[in-house]
Amino acid sequence: MSNNTSISEFLLLPFAGTRELQLLHFMLFLGIYLTALLGNGLILTAVACDHRLHTPMYFFLLNLALLDLGCISTTVPKAMANSLWDTRDISYSGCVAQLFLFVFLMSTEFSILTVMSYNRYVAICKPLHYGTLLDSKACAQMAAAAWGSGVLHAVLHTANTFSLPFCRGNAVNQFFCEVPKILKLSCSDSYLREIGLLTFSVFVALGCFVFIVLSYVQIFRTVLRMPSEQGQHKAFSTCLPHLFVVSLFVITAFFAALKPPALSSPFLDLVVTVLYSVVPSAVNLLIYSMRNHELKDALCKLL
Image (cartoon, rainbow, N blue to C red; front, side, top):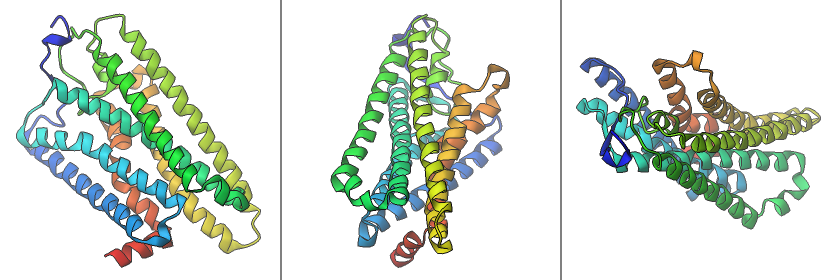
């Protein structure tokens, strides 16, 4: 294949070589997908219907639930269909759309997680200024900036990736169209431009992660100085779930992007990708409701 115009479809990585294991993977992904749909759907409905949850924290949680639904719906249904029907193909336009949506949703989700850490910092460390710093206008502006930055990232990465000539076949070594795997199909030195863009994105994400860590350092210092054990418990109950989600998301995503070639293998790549692209979308309901009494009460009333 001399260039990308001669490619009409890409071949995705199959989960297994035998029919029985393919069906097993289909059932496993179906369970994860239905759990994500149910969990995030319940969060969306509870936050929208319960006026007690119309606060900045739950506004950003609503955004996170929307992003989780979109992210898992971008990759998992196609992987399930390929396992069920014993196929590997995805059309060229489908691959472009999948890559764009995945980068857009993942970038926006990390931005929302960063904003949520700022929300927790202001609520605990600067409670007297909370209403001023995080009024409805400020929350809307921060959410719009997060979604806008996601669109910008997605446009840049998609345009750069699919402007390259592909001459190393059309087999993508991943269960969805992922930028690094697509780049391996290119035989042009122009791919260095996209590598540079990926490196810049990693450094931006690293900056956001440092901001999150510093926010939580200040939060924990403030919480540990609280005289009331009940106040400490309430603060930790709202902060620890968010910190767990961020840690799972960031550590696996950074490992996938920065792991040395010596550690690279198809199985490890697959496991790490599932951990940062699929699992968080399915477990957010459990994590956020486990120690959050307001959300648990709202979900119980809803059910």
